[in-house]
Length: 447
Ligand SMILES: [Zn+2]
Image 1: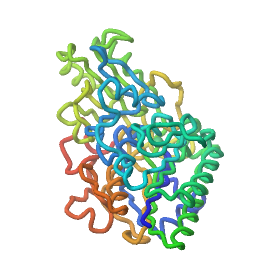
Image 2 (image 1 turned 180 degrees about the vertical axis):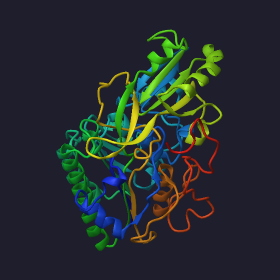
Image 3 (image 1 turned 180 degrees about the horizontal axis):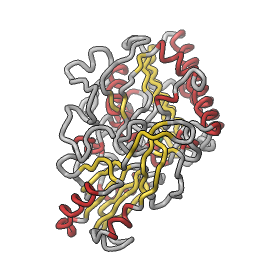
Image 4 (image 1 turned 60 degrees about the horizontal axis):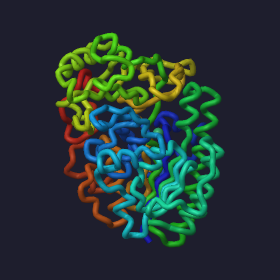
């Protein structure tokens, strides 16, 4: 039987894979193919990455623009936290669609369905299958086809122990017993701890060690199933890395002070913080402010790369649904107190607590938040090799589809099996999240 198993260790930075911290991943790198130029989506934030992974399409097509977004509702730009369990249901009620293109769960519903075990935010879990074609198990909701609650919901905490309990269930129930065509295990660590302690600190480093054990448990379970004759594609990856927060910027306050937004609750211009990125929405009635906003953002000391209507395409977006600008906050290559490189300003979030100075964060185009992990193991990949060239989140769904022998029509990504990426220019320099490279915003190349 052909199957695909994906293990995502949320937020794991590529340079934290070491013999001391992650021995199982180091060993796996030698028997899998390794992708040292794998990139996250933009914003490099879990909910939008999840939708991008699930659909194989960029945000311009699946229409979930960020971890926090604004929706034009009854003529008003309304801010939303996509992490809420009901956000995509609300988006469907407002816009007619949760995601505008099919997910793997929908595509594979006629082939036995997909099962996702997920320990990140409820909204990120929902993005894998918002319309209820397969099964999604999450600590806040566990549902099957038709979004009907299951009898055996996932009851874990968002920490390493919760990931461990979820991994145990995933191995027993998904890998051994239910055996769906695709099974996805999306662990909450080490992302969760990295938001709360400095990268590289002792409190941090115990957690990637635990995540490494969880990945190793799945590797062992897959080996047993292969010994029993199954042809399993095993993907071990992360969704983004992290940078160290070097400062917190209240972008809306900055826009108000510049006379570009009326007030804190006004609907003319709405800036939605996405960690180290910001999405700026412009109400149609305030369209005359576009040029002034553009000039202000490009001159802002806190802005790194600025993308406007004509360049949003280079980072997978479209100027739709009120989205006027996307900003990756300013980064530098300085070290934190534990010698870990990569710092970034973050945008002050509307809901979460903002004082995360010195801890990890992500969302932008910084070198290290755009350095997630990707290793793929199957007979179609070259054991122990490192493949040069940029590989994107959108390439995973076509790769899974090819292994399962189901069509990937309409996806933006390409299958990564040997031969699958031929004909696509491999970009080893320059910063573009789409292919071929388009024009860039303010700084263009990686900061
Ligand atoms: Zn994440």
